[in-house]
Image (tube, rainbow, N blue to C red; front, top):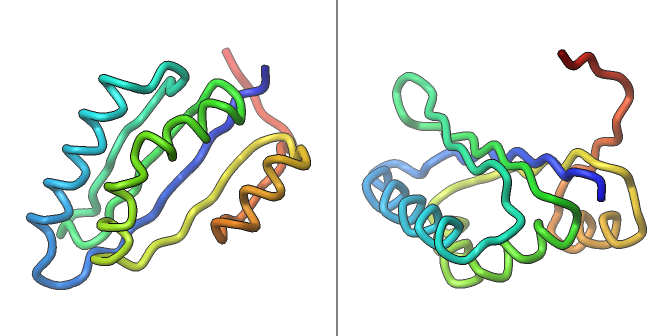
Length: 116
C-alpha cells in the first residue's frame, strides 16, 4: 500500500490560539487512541504562533479516511477559527483525486526523492 503524506497549514484567527491548541490536543488524543493507520501526526508553529503546520503520514488512502472520520467533530471547529490550506502527496488514484476535490485539497504527485 502506498503511503499518503499530507500537510495542513493553519493560519490562526486573532485571539483563538488557546482554543486552537485545545482542539489540536483533542485531535491528537483521538489519533493516538483510535487511528490504526496514522504513521505520523506532527504539529509545528512558526515563531509567533500565528501559523501551525500539521505534517501527516498515513498507511494508504484508507488511513487518511480513517483519521478524517475519527476527527469529524474536531475538524469543523478547527476550520471555524483558522484559514487553512491542505496539501496531499501521493499516487493520484481515482479515490484520492475525488477526496482532494471534495475537500479542496491540493494533490501533488511524486516526482523524485532520495532516501537513506
